[in-house]
Length: 340
Image (cartoon, rainbow, N blue to C red; front, side, top):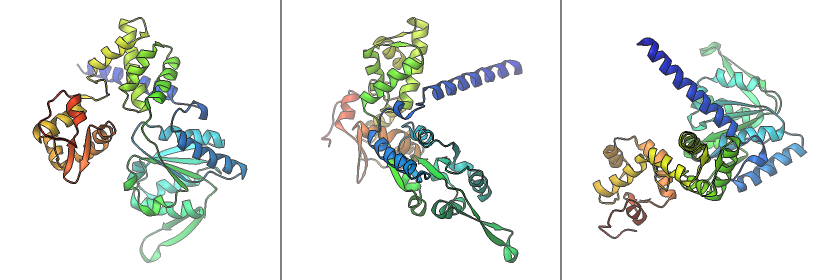
């Protein structure tokens, strides 16, 4: 029995590793391959070219936006454009001042340190970053009590690029030390179609124009979701359609995944149904909604609400969340009262 369980776990691990390798292969490797976010790219191009012209390191940058929009990819592409290495870590990994000291002192001149989930940086660690980012000084305290000593280390020129899904949780002192802050927005369907077309080519599968459009419509305006769905459609086409992806293959795959034509998953529809059926369309507060769904408030705010608001299926009112007329129509539920 133990052997069977071990083999099952190994199989899961191999599948996960294969998916990670595919994700890396689909990630843009050059600036021109990065599709979308044109305003952000234009501003970044100016910063990069100016820094290279002065033979300086790039300014510290902060990216924020929903997961899967390309924040990490942009950080690595900036490193390539600057001709320097990009080292990465995450907010939760920076638990002690020694962690930051080790990372910063090991950076080569002009290298980039990418910090994901920057809103989760420990506050004590954050204070070490202030002088490091501002004046390239690392202030360390050795010992405790009256015998404690403070000394400073000079750091080479470097760039910190931070990414977060919760910009409001980045403290004002840390946020002010970034030379530029950029919000990455949801993609339009045309850009998502281009991304799907490129990914299909890299995966060596044939996909029709109608299939691309169907897949783009269900991709939540997010490249990561588009690539994830494309991989699942590829699986379906491999088994049933000789690796050819047409609109029917996309529809069948989405049905299996319980994803509708707008990209709503089962959990998204449950949020709408709960607001409409249990709270008469709203308004309803997040606490009450979370209790009814048996979900954390943060999960509703981060995972479900942004996309539902983007589609215009819910909106915020002073009293809470309200299901719009579009939500009733999408779920084919008759209106019972006047909605905004």
